[in-house]
Structure formats: structure tokens, C-alpha cells
Amino acid sequence: MHGADEQGGGEEVGVGPWEGPWPEGAEYDPELLARGDRRNVIDRYRYWTVEAIAADLRARSHPFHVAIENWQHDLNIGSIVRTANAFNAAAVHVVGRRRWNRRGAMVTDRYLPVEHHDTIPGLAAWAVERALPIVAVDNLPGAVPVDAAPIPRACVLLFGQEGPGLTPEALAAATLRVEIRQFGSTRSINAAAAAAIVMHEWARRHAS
Image (cartoon, rainbow, N blue to C red; front, side, top):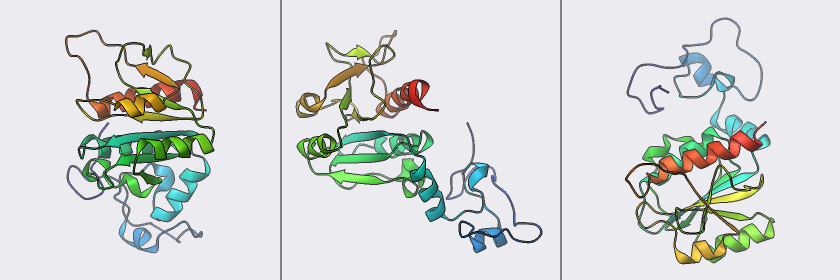
């Protein structure tokens, strides 16, 4: 995939100023209609305001959530947020440190809810209230390969830090543990890559 991010760089993407009479509708941004829309968004959302895009995504979001432990200010979080947007997750939940590096998100955090929980028990209580099982993603003994696991349609996919993986507390909160099949010499793969694989597996089964 290619395309410049919304803050510049790379080849020019998008469309120029609207030609002809302007379309009617509250979703359209007059400034974008006048100047062009060079954002990295799909054609459906050309010339739409950020608020209108976010509202439309919420209205048709998928029933899975993505949660990430953030005890070490993990640089993967931004990339995971961007992938969650691509698969139209219901929301992203950052557990632990409130601050995270948004650069990798390429401003996609404007388009989907990003919520914060101080602790894993806080996330777990939130999930229990909504009857959402937590699916822990880590390559540990007892984990089921994600392509063979009974991943629920409505759930929370929980990812750990690059390196240490999920904390014991996070693993204890999960009702299912899954792993990604690997065939090389490395013990683990990048957290952002793992998140993309698992979200794609969810979409392969459950997305319409």
C-alpha cells in the first residue's frame, strides 16, 4: 500500500478543488471543497469533515475492540491504532500510561475512539459490564493458534508490549489466549505486525 500521510511527505495523493457546483450536505468541509482534499482517506470520505467521517465509522464499526498495555511507552501503539482504524474496530483502549506516541497513527486516532484505563482490572471491569470476552495475544504455552481459535465476534483483542509481551495480570484477565503460527528462528514478531495479523483474522471470519 502507498500514499502520503496527512501531514505531508511522499507523492501527492487525493483530489484537487471541487469542480462545478458544490455538493450539499453537512458532511462536506467548505475548506476542503475549495482547496482540495489531500488526506489519506478512501474516496467515500473525500471532502468530508473529520467529525463526519468519525460519525460514519462509528455507525458501522465492527464489534471488536483493541486494547494495548502501555507500561513502557511502546512505539507500536500508533501503528496499532492505524490498523484498528483500517479494520474499523469499535475502539482502541490504552492500558497503563495515558501518553503514547501518536506519530505512527498518522492522525487516524481522530477517526475512532481511543479510551484509557489505568489498570488491567479497570479494562477487565469495563469488558465484563459489556459482556466482551478478552482475547490475549501472546506466544505462550497453552495458547491456541489464532487461525484455529474460537475468536468471538464481539470481543477485546489484548496486546502486550514489544519484548516482554503481556503481563501476568493481563493473561489472567483473558478468557482465551491465542498465538500466531511462526516458522522461522525468531521467538516473536513485531507487536504492530502481530496486531495486524490478528485483526485480519478477525475480519476474515466476521466482517461482512
